[in-house]
Image (cartoon, rainbow, N blue to C red):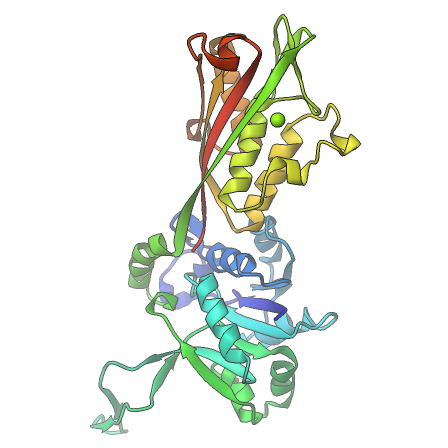
Length: 382
Ligand code: MG
């Protein structure tokens, strides 16, 4: 099912304590808003609409510029108005389904999205619901308590999934004096059928300062670390220099290859692609394509970095091993690290370039060519 998402991040969140609005507060080192935006984009929401506080649109665009299909619009005076603005941003090319989500629930995952879309198959709307575990009472005007049966009571979370046309229509027909407290309320009032999907305590809403401590603990489980590895080898041929890790190193031979034959960057590209399950360098840059003849290999790395970002991923570190008898790597090692760190947009201490010989054995030992291995760790939404 083709679906879009609207993330409402337009609130000021005064209950979360003084300081900046909660969508910009850091959780696990990233703004609260980035968590759900990256997770929903990685789950396939396209376009992804972020409804930002008026005046914060550029900030949202800058923070989330790596996400494909991002649209940013300004929020309104109430949550319902903000949702309407978000839905309007999708009107030109209406999706089949839309997920409406509060940025204050950062720990949404692909699994939540799949469950909701499945539940939506036979309904107009599907919402994550949790049973009420505590005893529920109502206080009357005098303060006296009366116990309310909790059977059938559900706590409702976001994201909430709807057929796009149904939700737009429901908001257009909403006649209540107060704005609906959630989007499903508008669809229910319009006679639509909203069903419950399993909720998750991890979809907790960040409301009070103490909620952030709980979310920090849960955040660890909402991301997975993936490992990618790559290997490449090229044969020596005529020439007076070789390209290695983006640097041109003087040598009494060159390397034979379709592109610049930079084994370090080729192994690194394959490691990045491997971490997000996106095939290999030959698939993205076929040697049969004349565009890549003599091409500088940093563009292969940049493309792979882009695919990692599209998957909602962040590169954690990279470790490269160059395997050759010559040229000597040590004099160039720090410059290679710096170049790789620059390409991956990582601090220097997250990048390692090592070198080894094979003690005269094998093709590298016979100086027929050189080889490289790369390992990267990438953190992505679970
Ligand atoms: Mg190669």
